[in-house]
Length: 364
Image (cartoon, rainbow, N blue to C red):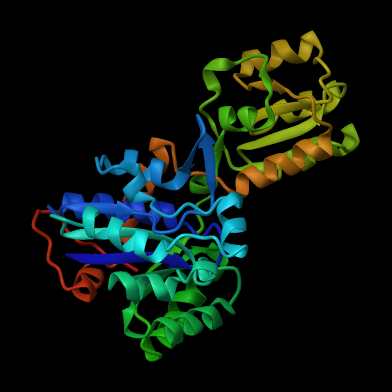
């Protein structure tokens, strides 16, 4: 059995997407897989129980049947953190090891979803410590925000040593793609860091649905309910003069426009461009004319109680935590991996071989 621990150097780097995408590929290649999130810091309570959201999601996507409490054995909500700080914490390393030993039985590959390299240091379960404890190989997902991402990749190499099976440069802007491929990749490989993929920034994968936005704001959908599964890629606030609104709204496609319910001029301008949803703030009902036009175009209008700036903050935070839930997202990501990810190099680094008939392709 081999364990692959997927970590990142930054938040929202795409780890859940890689867990789902790589797990699917392993399954297609005839390998029996298990999934774990060794340490969960983003949790929620359901019926009094603490649940790890990421583990619950990947469990469904990969159709694995192991118990959720084994998939996410260490849940660090605020009460558990306080207990650790007060010296009353559990032996989380022992709990993790026991859960891993149980869930890994009969598996060819264990896919482990981590956080950033430092997460878990409070309980001696940083990325390095988890990798050592579970004898796992590590794949680093590096979110490309500037050329200095190389610095963090090399720092990870020093910390992880031979356990680092490779890295992926993810979310690379199209304007930087040639530089990354021609300069950064050769540099990293000279430093003994295998680059298993260079993936372009895909707005669709970072998008959220209209329904998700409405739920995050506690909003009421006023029209076009059949279009609530449409994906929103950009956020714009409509607080300008009507003279400049149309030009402004044309600058971004597939967007949500957040504006006051008493601004029919802005709302009509937004409807003339590539708009997926309009959020009406201040709990102010729209004009019947605007509502009729939105219904005609299939653009949901969502009525919310928040003011415009508060609604903007909620939506931006929700985008930062955009979940890899919709089927069209993970189908698209699987196709990207099939084309851009070097599965042969990963398998070689893990010391495993496919059992099925999936064909590896890696064009970049």
